[in-house]
Amino acid sequence: MVNSFFLNFIKIDCNNVDQRIDNFLFKKIKNLPKNKIYSLLRKGNIRVNKKRISYNYKLKINDIIRIPLINIKKNIYIDKYITNKFKNYIIYEDKYMIAINKPYGISVHGGSKINLNIIDIFRSIYIKNNLELIHRIDKFTSGLLLISKNIWLLRFLHKNFKLNKIKKKYIALVYGIWPNYIKYIKNYIYKKRYFSCISNNFNKGKLSKTLFYIKKYFKKYTLLDIIPSTGRNHQIRLHTSYLGYPIIGDNIYGNKKQNNNFFIKFNIKRLFLHSYSIYFFHPFLNKYIKLYANLDKNFLSIINKLI
Image 1 (cartoon, rainbow, N blue to C red):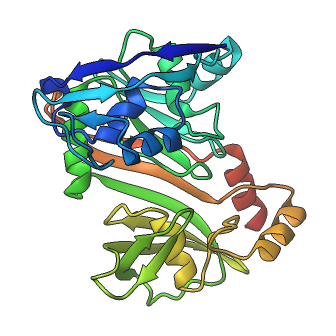
Image 2: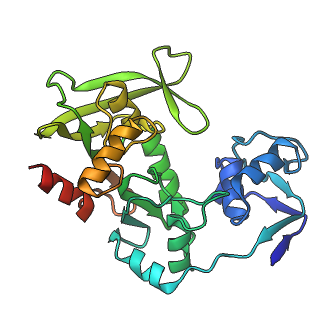
Image 3: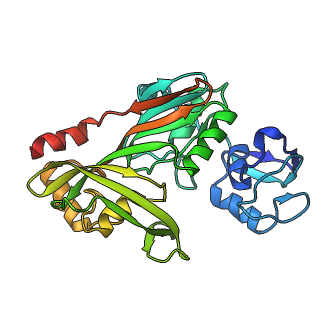
């Protein structure tokens, strides 16, 4: 069954100023695939003030958005067993935000081929709140994820992420014995459709910086503490691979055959990258908050087997 989303005109108020049109539409037409929204924008079917606009157009006060007739699927029912399970991943909550320890293997947001995702699960739990992702982590990365209940907090933290004022730390298990002298990498990253690439030319890509600290050596592997100073797509995965020490389980930037041999040997299949710490200023509580997310049992079991 489908619902019809009829021709509609939406006037932008102060709550949505400076938001990108594509992100606004993702929230407004939640069950329409993102590629369809981009197609409607590209063809001029969705307009602002009667004009064609780009997907990255930033909304202004009193803008009038025209949305045409669209057939969309009804909301997907999320079973109580799933919602109860994901409630257990909450590690911090106040009336402005939630922080969870995201498990490996689930996307943070939906897409044309993705039904079950973090934001939809938590929206089904917090029906009265307008939940939004404050930031994103990869489907195959586990660890800390912040979700906003408040539009002003969302904007504040978005701005602070862009200014690199929010500090995140990761732990990763990589192939090889990491050299003591590699403590830092700086270059430029540009994004292709499904992956990212390194460039040494500032005209092609965005500046990216990552810091590395050796946590523990094993016979053939190294456990690292990693601090990304910037937040580019797949930055940590790309940088470790570029330096010759890919993260175990990374089938995009690593070696699939090497990963398969590891999975068979230890009977665990995952990307061994985990976001374990985040430090930020909370404007409503007027204080700095530091949160930690413990490693899951699969990651811990591998570390114990390698000792």
